[in-house]
Amino acid sequence: PETITVAELANRMAARQGDVIKKLMTLGVMATGPQSIDADTAELVVQEFGHRIKRVSESDVELGIEGVEDRPEDLTVRAPVVTVMGHVDHGKTSLLDALRAADVAGGEAGGITQHIGAYQITAPSGKKITFIDTPGHEAFTSMRARGASVTDVVVLVVAADDGVMPQTIEAIKHAKAADAPIIVAINKMDKPGANPDRVRQELLSHEIVVEAMGGDTQDVEVSAQKRTGLDKLEEAILLQAEILDLKANPNRVAEGSVIESRLDRGRGPVASVLVQKGTLRRGDIVVAGAEWGRVRAVLDDRGRQLKEAGPSVPVEVLGITGVPAAGEPFVVVETDTRAREISEFRQRKIKEKQAALQVAARGTLDQMLA
Ligand code: GTP
Ligand code: MG
Image (cartoon, rainbow, N blue to C red; front, side, top):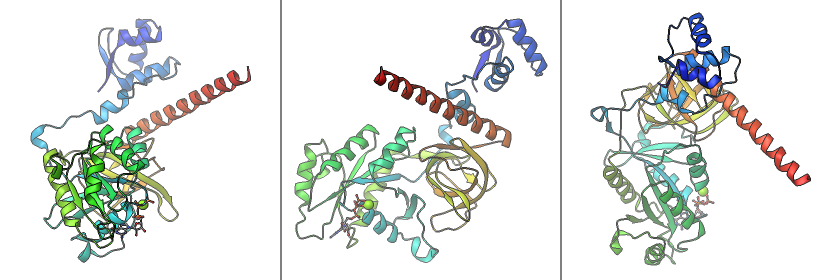
């Protein structure tokens, strides 16, 4: 956890060291000038001195709960998390639907399939793949803008009868900026005008060199409509995952990202989250963005209650008291008190940011009127 010396704290508040030490004593903390106190205690002292809290190096709060690095020996293989991107109408949604329908575990499981922003399938080989099913780079970039990096692999859908188009190029840029390897799905192969070689050729000018042309980007010909090539695509994703050596520690408190969330009439706030580390369980206390709550239920994309969800598993979580934004981090904490503290800290930061934006907006207006 972050710490600060008593002397430095006094210095930053322009207060006398002796006064800070006395204040600490009233809080039950014995410390001298060169000694360090933790960020929480420091925050209390700052408040006691009537200062506004400016512990804004976000890490002050974050580090205490999220900064624990896993030891290599505690890591185990996790499923890849895939985002599908591509030009409008090239078949992103159709492909996601087809992959989900082809899930070998889905058939016998039954249950009503619902949209929770992501789903996990089991490939014929028995290995699992997680798909974020809010496709398009908007979701991708808004998540990234919030600092969430959830995608391991980007599947770039290019219609074989249309070729590389402006949003294809956009998607390539986003994937590269995120350092996510691309797998090209050449879709609509069933169409009479399908010309996959033209697609491969066009990709060259955007520095995507597929394997057939001597590069290292995998490409797979598919038809989302006829459901062909889907297992090949899954194998390509799993091969890429192996190369990436994706691992996480399931034996720790859960951390992850909010994929989307909404207010459900009957159930209250419902958050779709992707667990990225650790294991999430019913009864856990979670902080998601500036919201928090005790997990009342963990559900999969078929509405089934789960006891727990490990790394790369997308779930719906009930029990959070608000609606956190997509891309916000979530983390399990020890106590209600801690959860409330972090949530309040973040709420305050949001308010500060809004106030600053208002001031900036007013400034611009003043300039415009001057
Ligand atoms: P946006 O979300 O609007 O960007 O489109 P999208 O990329 O999700 O494409 P979508 O899956 O909605 O498909 C667009 C159209 O292409 C629909 O009419 C699909 O039926 C059709 N389509 C998708 N995949 C295939 C395919 O493999 N073959 C054929 N023939 N048509 C397809
Ligand atoms: Mg779509």
